[in-house]
Image (cartoon, rainbow, N blue to C red):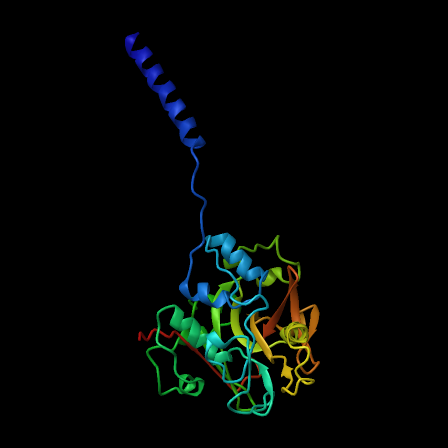
Length: 295
């Protein structure tokens, strides 16, 4: 009888302890933070859904360094000069040494700055990154042999994608994860975007009609009298830091945004954000690099 009562008491205590254990507050599960993401996403504009969700998922509290996002500037390397007017040191398709533009970063300036913030040495030129005889120890060969969600399994946040266009020009972008990594699910995505939940996302400083119009309004408010005062007019940037999705067939995008030339760009609308597609099918050359060189 005493043994039975003892067992009953132990059982009651176990139940009470179990209930108490269930009522104790548990720390919320947080997604992993990456130093490269802390830096890269800070160059997006205020309210950008990827910056917002990264903060919500990780508790990072990263703020946009520039309310309108980091603008593009040909040859731009110095973050401290953003976004003051400047003359580019060299001319290009969209930039003239005789005209003033808002200072920003170009594609190389952006990725080098991000890598430096994460504790790595500045990466080499894009042409050298594409040179098959160089950086064999950094080349991510499996990522080049896959597409879509299969490619994503071969990538790590911070991997660089070096590109040579058919025109001979170069570009560089950085892998930042997938829509799933930013807290999206099939149910929370637009129906047309849900099949690409696990497709790679890139962040890069590149052409963007939205940036151009955004900063055109900014310039009109901040520098309204430049021409009248005898100063050279300040021209809007070619683009800025944006997030795009990789490997999605352009024909699957239900919307079209305009680039700076007024040409249609396939995109999805995600929480008000124009998520453009990066299509590698027509590129002359690409190479994935996992840059791990320390200063």
